[in-house]
Length: 87
Image (cartoon, rainbow, N blue to C red; front, side):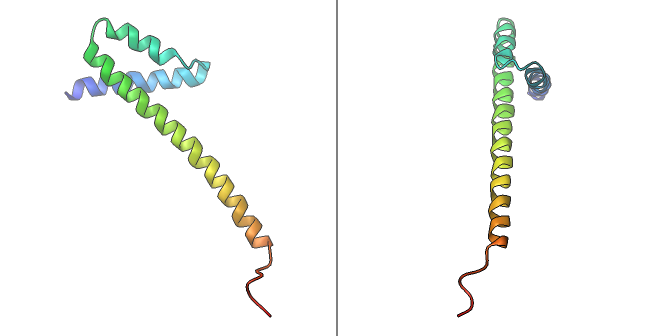
């Protein structure tokens, strides 16, 4: 069922973009409810695609915060003299 996945992915991508642009966290549920009345199959594929997008976004935000934290630690370690060497 490649067509249903393609349609769901396109709609999910557009919805996620609109949610970010207009700061509307519930938009994907409204769209889901609307399309579910005419195609439960598309609704399920759409919800799955939305969840994947949201999980990826959360994961990316975590990863980026973690990189900043790791970079700060590395910079602090580089500034601190190594107390394990010497006499």
